[in-house]
Image 1 (cartoon, protein in one colour):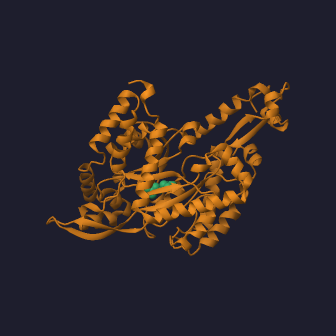
Image 2 (cartoon, protein in one colour):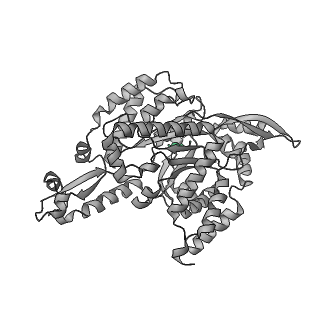
Image 3 (spheres, protein in one colour):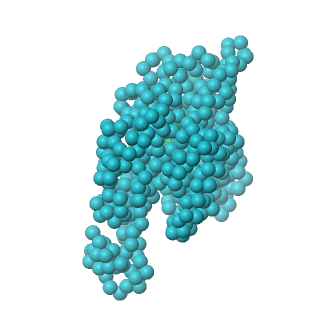
Length: 463
Ligand code: OOG
Ligand code: NI
């Protein structure tokens, strides 16, 4: 088969995220309500800010502004993770970043599968935050062995999905009909199953060890646990959720509201209690419930350098040392105020962020720079001379403290638990069967390439 007959991985990813969105709206009606609210707020924000509208029109596809940006799953075994990597590769999604959540009381470690090139991100930015359960952090050895046995017995991919993954690897992609079938088959892995594969006693024991363990081990597959559209005004959506009968988590995760957004802000509605039936020894089913699935929204800002990230982490820690947000929302206002005050130490204008070396920027020639016969001494003088301009590079990854906050608020308000902090990227990458991309190196590379495209007007590129 020649290249010309292969469907682009970007198109397969687009089809997959659209199919997943439809399935999830159908499975979780509150998510559909959130999507409508997000679309309304985005439309109102654009109507009130024509400059923003023009900018987005130039850089993004406005028609797709309210579509999903990410989702999340939790896997049980190294083999599941390795096959999931191969499945995502068919859709042009590759593992970026390593997140250790054990420090934050959640027994998983994670990566984000996402498109990497600019062009692919623009075509469809859909990512999946993918966690692997760490049974090695479960103290009870007996339970650990039983959970491992249950997981070893399940099969989360359909046979056809695996055949198509192998075919894509062999042929360098999939033709139209195969791509369509691949999307249908892979969707099955993410589907909700309301019949557990364990009995109520086992579920209770897993649940007592950690609610997340029950969520991963008790079911036939790694149901998608949330999807996340992009909002242009996260504070407005957070405020409006209650009026639409959806209960927001206590606080928005991440940095405060700012003139120049940094990194990532996220919030979600709390996971719903859903009916599940459990096996009982005699072949009949016993009614029960499980709480896992929710809806989230995100708003992204500039990617930070290691120096910027260190400042962000310090300010977030300082804030949380003063006010630790309570799950019930009782001190939410105090937290938001303190967060804003503490983050006053983080420059809030693009040039200040840039000159302090806190963020990554993309440099380009201005119209004047393109026509210039003059050159300037350095990158900084070229900017001052109006030959070169810069735009923030959007952060496309995740934040471990925020992710832990999203996990916690959807595992119930008392789920916080201590685990020995034990990041283990080596073990994760061995289980994944590949190395994860270092996100800092990736953003630095984008910035460097953009500087090189401006060399025509700069004498000494080392700014
Ligand atoms: C994943 C939570 C992390 C985010 O947006 O930070 C996440 C999970 O609950 O499985 O999706
Ligand atoms: Ni999320």
